[in-house]
Image (cartoon, rainbow, N blue to C red; front, side):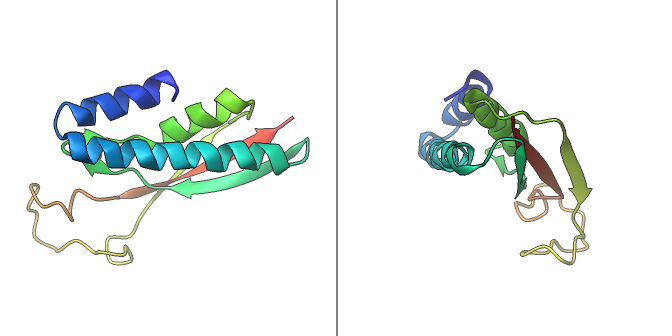
Length: 120
């Protein structure tokens, strides 16, 4: 696993070993997905992946930057990561209108990230 991704996993591991294993499994599986995408994608073509970040044990997973780092380790070029706000009422688990900043649901994804992977 690349350095930044390992750093995120380690930060979560310091707080909750079980949850860090879950995050490690997710990034390991995405590693395989991106590796296969790179293998099958023709040269001078691109692929788009849309993800959201999670907040696990108070650690922002920075999924967008981790996947960028993983993709670049195979040779993908990531020219830009787009960002879009998610409407509070259109999320899978909408947050309440009450501002309880300790609420796990409220701390879930507020943005989605559009990652462009380009293969030369």
